Length: 169
Ligand SMILES: [Cu+2]
Image 1 (tube, rainbow, N blue to C red):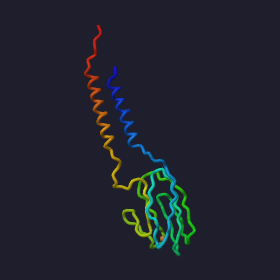
Image 2: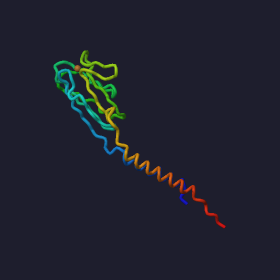
Image 3: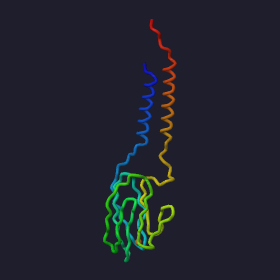
Image 4: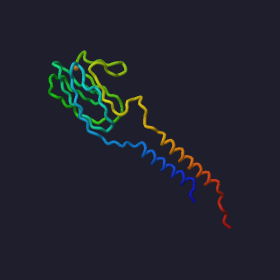
């Protein structure tokens, strides 16, 4: 006889399959080589967006006639001071967690850090994953499937436990 354990196992398998199908990321890791210009004491562009697992490299060049640096401390990246348009290429790295990671120029007076950890002036951000505050994936299909699975499971368990065993004589 198919008892409560069968229904419970069935429900677990079905729920897992539903969650995997609906939530599993469908994108593959990408290679990014971002070219950044330093000009008029600012970075251009100053916003980059990647996902966890992507491979990221910054190529930075200076179009001002004075020194700048490129610092991305969360990934241990630091260009050192340089002048001129010869590009500097960062080591590549792979983000392993979502977040907003600031890069900045460390030359005196070019950028300053705010109390909340963000930067003003010659600075920009590498955004990994969705920015905080954006809605997550729509969970409605999971809730609907989950509710149906739960209802079927409860019905199955009730049915299985209420059936009286047939006595053999
Ligand atoms: Cu600078």
